[in-house]
Length: 487
Image (cartoon, rainbow, N blue to C red; front, side, top):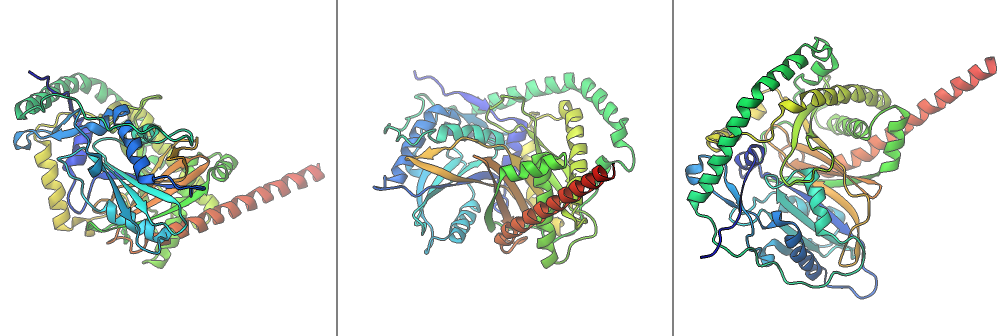
């Protein structure tokens, strides 16, 4: 009799990404990779990607996981490991429409990103994008958020790329683990056992959580008028905050990491503060052409990682926070200083509340409740009527700082593609790679007609902040010189 394959319960948070999914709101994340044009004889890029994935499936068993549903959806499904991976399905060729421009590439990605994934298979796909006018290579890799978050995605990238230009030897795809696929009884047993353990953990956790919460509520940061409470204000209504459909828009832009680090160092700000300030400047310019800049500042919801250093486990380990983008401030340097204060308050709260934020919890009944609420929220168009808690999603993910390769071709750019929701029609995700910050603007068509406007506005916002920083530096130097002469 053959052995049964391993069953891995989903965490409560990972399962919620399945529950929230509707045709209008797919819950997968993705990345777009652009490779240098090969010199001399051009190797078979599609074949090289297949070979890389055949090896990657063995090194990253998460790629061989498939969902097994619990009867009547009483609890979240479980992962079954060791599934056979059909590379003909999971690695596909797609022709970028002629003439193969950057704009055509972005539109192709937007179309692919709008399509739901097949839950009867492992939840990932790579699309090799052919026909770029300059001869470069590209591919788009999407994977469901229930499988991993941004930090785990970067860890997975290390198994999906080569660290040198040397071509990897061809290997046969992994056939998967031999054994019987578990039936519904085994799936239900694993899910309910997991939930029972989470109930016990929850009961033990409540006294500690109550004590920590009391400390946060009584802290100076929670006093009226504090920066923290200004972060928690509702955002103004904007064209970005509407009920969305499945159609997506996508555009990219890149900035030199050293320049942003230098600006941050000049004002005692982090890279993340500078990114938030640039996004605020970008949105100011965009909204000035689309309905006007609101008097009240826009609010961003920003994922904060809950991972300990060195933690690369697959799954989601993050929570969402709110931060004031100071978009009511026209001066880019003043805006950066305001964002620095706002983000500092958010990070301080996250550190204090870290022990209060569970990423795993019981799921009995959750799929019914969350799925029904997600469907009802979209059908009711409530997002068009109620004040938005946040106006935009902004995420900053540290990426690999060494060059990566596929089929001997160096990866030149690495851009993230993410999720939008009803009421949150724009997601700006940023990922660092070899000295560059790649900005991916993922938008619902109902909220943003042309995402390339945002990509262009980012470049102007960057130039404005650089000029403002230089002027401040010149004034400071002049003041110091005058004081020295007077002394």
